[in-house]
Image 1 (tube, rainbow, N blue to C red):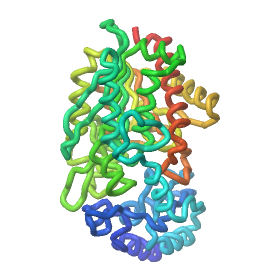
Image 2 (cartoon, one colour; image 1 turned 60 degrees about the vertical axis):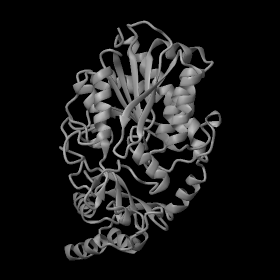
Image 3 (cartoon, one colour; image 1 turned 180 degrees about the vertical axis):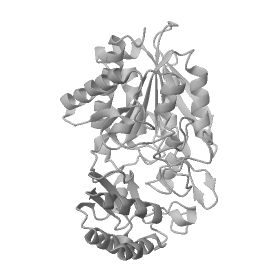
Length: 441
């Protein structure tokens, strides 16, 4: 049996077709050999497998390490775990043999992932779309998002201030806005970052929805929320990766820094707290590569510098990070099972936020620490903000869809408004409940 596994592993690890974009090496690999082409996922299958035994865990750990034709959504860790895996078309038969040989229970969630991607690209607004036609029925290019932010700052200068963290690895600006209705110096601030993982398009869309609601909602409770705090919101803190997900590879996650024949660092594994200790890779070709050193990446440095400069003057007491997918509301830590000092409060606040979503849309969100709820991971922005900047209210959202989603990160545009609406309601609950517990005094 072990010999069969060894043979399958070697077959799976072989290069196959260059268009199989699980290979995260150079552009030639990721783009099928042509810099002008987009990575394609024709007849790529999405499997959800159940790791029933310790042997299953061992097998899939070895497979993830050996193969560049299988892309894992998470890591094989414990027996009883379910895991979603993308398998490139040339390796489907071999992967099916592996499942049969080890009697692995599984479901096929999608038989041709490219169809989803093609449909998703059709939901993108043209780059020529003027800023006054920005909406939440389509996805938008980076420049469109920035144009809209600048329009708000021009039209509402007493409330909206344009922010710029500086330039990315490839020289793109990292832009955001400050929303401040009041001039009192004792205002506390909510900081929101999204788009740190490029392929999670719903995150920037949700962040811009938040901005729209804070500025223009007619709901008195939202107006009160907007005026009770200042807001610093950056929709796309990984602009290079976000742009590349439109032009090169819809499933691109990392930034676009070059390391030999491989590109990209997972910026949410690059922060200087317990860096590269768990749930991260030291291999530049892996999707969760933590970088050559802590805070090695320009984008990470920009976020750190901005927060270190503004945390005390702006009285940042809440840090929110928007991601997808899995419908989770999580708080620190990710790198350790050790509980933060206000674990009980964060647990209760997160649960109330999840209940608010359920009452609003019926969607089930789970809340807990990152380590307990999704998987161990180190070098995350939220852990760093909580531990190093002492920001007490720190949450990560994993937005729609559910953990066993058939679409993964390719959420249909029709889901933008309901996803953003429920997330905003949860944020309102978090901030209001934190206030009741004295965190903004």
